[in-house]
Length: 393
Ligand code: PMP
Image 1: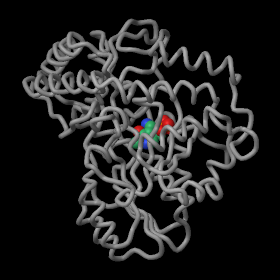
Image 2: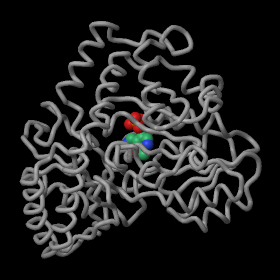
Image 3: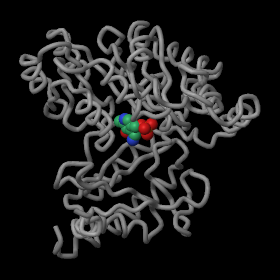
């Protein structure tokens, strides 16, 4: 039977779920040019504004001059170079763990860690709102896989009681579509009671959270005993690309020996590791970035409440505005764009049905005036939409 792709695509359109890629035609930052139009954007994950920092760019240029532009091979063949190694040592020191292992993407780091640790006869328990890469990893692992209610230690406990084999509890640190924090103290206590390990993917917490940008584990003061498997990504607050898993000597050696997404792929370009070494220094040193970002978030939340918007209880740069149906999310996002603001509309299946939202994200490179501008435009578009009948919900 021939593949009927046309019908699939048409159904996607009819459900208001068709996705399009905005074309970025000028460097990233708060002010961008997208599809030929200058816009103020609130949808990037460059939370600390390091992605086009001159010192990070210079480090990458120097790295390319010294090391070339490609990794050349997988880490186990001849692709593991000094910049990769130095970055792993720096990330181990930063996270306070014996070792760290570098990956080319966060998606792969998550696949690697879960599938290397859990297999047939084991149990993987995940928050139902975990990032897709973690859910995919749980499914691929071949372990018994179950999702507990969002951030609910009681729901986790029920599943832990039925678990068999080695048990891995997996959670986002900061939930990527809601911006809320995992209740790690409660989840870790429950896991410990049942002899399970906890794996935290803190893609969105490293940088903005913790006094030194050490993410959710620094925020809650949790060490390697509570969180033996800690994942961070480098394409967000670090401003570069890639990811890492930090943990014990044995954990990292296990990944090197058994994690197929680590073994069978080319290492990231060493120049990217050179850039990340620089951005890690800036991320740790420049506290003003975290402080400025926190002030912008506080101002936005107050302004959004004044407008009457529904927010999520999020202390992070991810500030979703809940609007309900996909159609409404698309409409509000289009109205904002019309007035010069780019904010992503997030729809099912990325989020549960009925919880479509605008995912507003902030960066230390935004100014207070830009946040005021967003609030003014939001108020205008929201009030206008409220006056219109919702024919399409
Ligand atoms: N984990 C989380 C929570 C994420 O939000 C993302 C990316 N959006 C990833 C993992 C994947 O990271 P990467 O983009 O480096 O593949």
